[in-house]
Image (cartoon, rainbow, N blue to C red; front, side, top):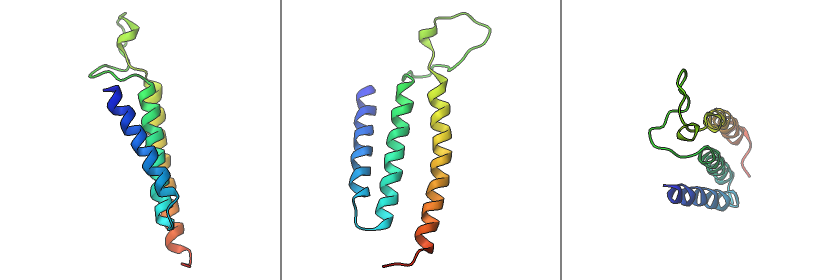
Amino acid sequence: MELLIAITIGLLIAAGLYRVAGPSRIDTVIGLLLLSQGANLTIFASGGLRHNAAALIEGEQLDVSAFTDPLPQALVLTAIVIGFGILAFLLTLILRSPSK
C-alpha cells in the first residue's frame, strides 16, 4: 500500500511540474493543482496508513500504535478547501485577463 501511495505522489508531482512548464496559463493552473494534490497526499501519508483504523477512541485504554494520527487528516482537509478557493480565484483571473 505504501509503495502505491509513493508512486502516486511521484506521478502527481512529476505531472504537475510538467504542466507548470507548459506554454499556456491554463497549463500552469492545472500544474499547480496537481502539485497541491501531491503535497496533500504526502501529508496524508505521513499520518500513517491503516485500513479501517479509528483516529481517536475516547474512554478506552488501547495500544496507541493501532490508531492513525488525526492531525494530517485535518491539515489535508483544510488544504483542500484553501486549494479550491485559490483554484477558483486563478480561473477567474484567467478568464478576466486579456489574452496575448
